[in-house]
Each structure stands twice: as C-alpha cells, then as structure tokens.
Length: 319
Image 1 (cartoon, rainbow, N blue to C red):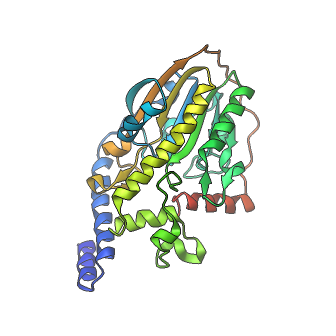
Image 2: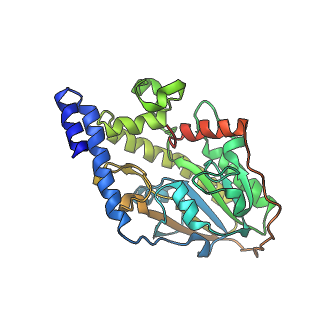
C-alpha cells in the first residue's frame, strides 16, 4: 500500500516518469516473488559435451535465432539457463574445481575478485582476464575482436583443455551500427550513478526505459546490432578452431516483457531464461586433460579494486 500511495503522490505532483519507475519496480517485485516460489532447473553446462563453449553475454534465444545463419553453420537447440544474471549463472554452474577448463572473460564477474560470493580463479585451471588487459576506455567495454584474439591465443597454448570464451556483447554498452551515446540521452545528474561523476551510458539507458523516457525500439535495435557485431567475431574464432564448439549465452535480456527491464536475478521469464545452444562440429577433437589445483591466488586489492568497480559500473552492474 505504501508503494501505491507513493505512486499516487508522484502523479499528483506532476512527476509521471518517477511514478512509472516505482510502478515498474512494484510489478517486478511481484514477478520475483512468484518465481521465488517455483523450482527452477536449467542446463548443467559442465556436464554437456563440448571442447569450446562460446558465451554471448545477455543474448536472447529469439534474437540469436533470427541472426546466426548469416554468420554460422550448426545445429541450433534451445536450453534453459540456470541464472538470469552473470553472477547467478556462474554461481549455479561452477560449484567445483575444473582442472580441464580455461576461461577467457570480457566480463569482470569471472576473475580474481570475489563478486557476489564467486571468485573465478578458485574454479578453473586458468582465467584470462581480458576485461583487465583489453578494456577500451573510449567505449567502456571490451571489443569483440580482443576476445577473439585472446581465445585463439589460449587455444594454441592449451590444446589439451576445454575452453570457455565469454564475450561481453550483445550486453551494453551498444557499440554496433546503432549506437547510444551520452550526448544523445543527456546526462541526468539526478540519477544515482551520476553521484561523484560515476554516471554511465548503460545504467542511464535502463533507468530511462523504466521511466518511459527512452525509445525501447531503438534499444532493441542497438542490442541486435551488438549481436551482429559479436557474431562477426565469433565466425572468425570458430573458423580457426577444431572440435566440438557450442555457442550459447549466460542469460537473455528483457525490454519490458512481463514488466521486466534488463536482466534482474531470479526472474525466469522466457526472455531471460531461454538461451541458444548452437552445436558446431568441425575438424578433429583432441583429448582434454584435467590438471591438479595449483596454489591459491590471493585476493586482489587496492587499485585493481577501483578498476573493477569502474568497469562493472560501465557495464551497468553498479550504480
């Protein structure tokens, strides 16, 4: 009742955008409550058969289905993800130590930092922190080409390991044909992420969508163009790999379906939970071998903590 009263007060005060934001928040809380009462079961990706698992961050099944044939040949299947955020997906899929697996990531959530209880270096033979080494400060993200180069280099260095190559696209920022810039959406200093100059395009756009102040059709097109951008690089990567390759996603993206914006955790609507599973079999498969766990990696502190925070914020994960 308090939330409804607050919405009414905002409307009476002539602040419809804020009222809409709180209304969307209220509806989302009801959707999350519904799914919290249900059992959710998704694919156990480490139990699946693959040599290379290519992850496209926040890639919807339906968008992928419409786009992939222009870039890749393979057998497209559908899977249900265990999570609707990267953190949830990591926590629910990687519960042990995988000495036969190398993980290359453009997403800081899988790293040598503990984020939401998960620290990637505790689970894999090796993690390549592409988000550290190949970050583009102008675009506030890792470009797909940098991930492709990292994947090819690691494949050559570790032919006896399975490999996960985690691209950040189609997740924002939107750097494809349809771009969304800070100048275009005008920086709103009232937004939480603007405090102390910590405003980012990604977080601002989603906030404007919640308020009904941004063209959702343009955002969807920007998302699809980001997908086209990354698929071009996935094509280049796949052309130089040999074995059983799977192209999938950690979760999808919502643009207002069932009152959901973005990809909040624990909300298993179709647009977030359904992910592509494109199977590509080419060339000769090599035997993969597990290695024993090496010495524990110490938690990284100080300046790297600041860098992590800045890059998580740039990707819209923090306000």
